[in-house]
Every structure is written in structure tokens, then in C-alpha cells.
Image (cartoon, rainbow, N blue to C red; front, side, top):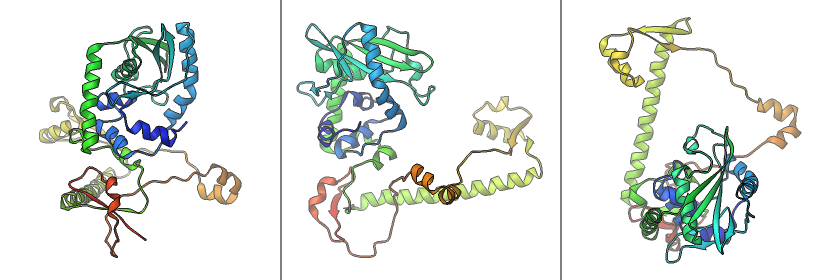
Length: 355
């Protein structure tokens, strides 16, 4: 379920428990710069398949936690702030113990990729051996509730359900508070943390205002030139790779593969390319194949014309942004009130075009 606009705006004002791992550089999926973009500019909700499945399985994960702990687990989830900080958290679930809310975090690890980052980091049932980013997440929650321990209820591929107990650690809590404080100075100053560049997926999800035009100085023009030069170099390299590939295919003649011979100098180069010790490269290497492959697909034209009702039912429309360098063909009228939309860049000024 997506957040309301009010929830989204409130979240932008704080570092959330799930943000802490990224802020401290312990999240394989997000960097501090990615979180910075979310807080400074806001992003469009974009729930992937793993997130969608995780949301549906969360209720079962909570119920299993209640059974394992022998307590009544609740999902009522008020927003909690660690007093005097920019750390604000929600809890997946919790139960009451002597008037203290004990956090219960639900995780569905590796639903689509059981060999992905962190999936093998889960220890035995009942231990505190969980991925580092989750230890940081539940510590943020414990700091907000005053709990001295917390639980993670996890559905793990090949294992099923497991429970983990994390004890509160003052040193970890101190590390989080220092990291959040340092990170928030970047949010306030609108400077990306540690000069990191946010990933393209996050940048594409910024909640952009239609028909806004950015006026940028020559410092940013250097970035544009670097981007275009890189594109040209990429195209040149791709053309060279295609030509070299075609020469290799020509050498194969009618064969589907080849055993290649090489000099010691060539062996050293091949060893570097293949990331092996050149001394261990054999005298001959069976390294080239050109085998028939198959891939299932759908004939969209046949489906559209022969089965139009089915086509309309299954058809999806994808929307995405494309970054291009274009010539300016007419003067653009501007509105200086749009400066608040500025991204991190050398002395940018934002201007709004009028059609």
C-alpha cells in the first residue's frame, strides 16, 4: 500500500529506521546519496515485485512472530521520533512489555533472489545474527520506544520462518545518532553526502514539477560535456567491439566453436582479461563458441490483430524519462519563484518555462 501525501511529506523530514543502514553505508541497495535525494526532493512511489510480495506476506510474518513469542502482536503504528533528533520511525509490529513497546520487524528475505546480497547473512533461529542494516534498523526503533531488546520475524528461502532477538547496544545507538546528525547537515545544506552521486533509478523517481526549466551555470556545462564525451566514447568502443566480433565470426567459418593458440605475450593479456594467473593459462584454450540459443516471446502483432480483447487485457504501458541534449529553438520565459527546486549543482538557478 502506498503512502499518503501527508505521510510522504512527514517521512521527508526525518531519517527513518529503514534509512539508517543506507545513511551509514551498510545497505547494498541504497547509498547515503540516494536517501539524500529522497529527503531533499521527494521521490515517486515505485513498488517492485519483491516489495509487493513482502507487503502481502507481512501479515503472516507478524502472526508467526506472535505464535513464536506467545504474545499478542499489534500492527497499530504511530510515528515515533527520537527526541531532539532527526530520527523518526514506524514499526512493522510491536507488543507491550511492562508498558514498553517492544519492536517486531518483519522481513521476507530473498523472495525473488535467494542468492542475493545479505540472504546468507542470517544465522541460527534465536540468535542475533542478521544483516547489519537490520541491526541498525531495529536499534533506531528501540531508541524511539525505549526498548532494550527487539525481534525480527523472517521468512527465509529454503528455511521457512525464523525469529531473531537483538539486544540494545549503546555504542550502536551512538553510532546511529552521529551518522544521522552528520547526514542531516547535508540535507539542510543541500549538498550530497561525501560527494557521492545518487543512482540513476532514484534520480529518475524524483517528483518533478511539469514544465520546469533549470538554468545552470558553466560548472554544470562541464558535466554535460563529460556526459556527451562519454556517450561518444561508448559508441566508438561499441563500434570497435562489433567490428572485432565480426572478424572473429569470420574466422570461425562454418564451425560453432574454436580452440585458440597464443604466444606467451597473448597469454598474459588473456589472463588479465579472464582474471586468471597468466602462468596457469593452458597452451590451448577452448574459449570461443557460437551456439544456437532460444528465447520464448510473444508475437505482439498477432496477438493485437487476432485476439484484440486479450491484447487490451494484458497490455501494459511503461512511462520513463529520457535525458537528452537538445538545441534551444526559442526563448524561454522564466519565473524565479521555482528556485526551491534546485538540485545539488554548482550555483544552480531554477527557472520555470511558460508554454
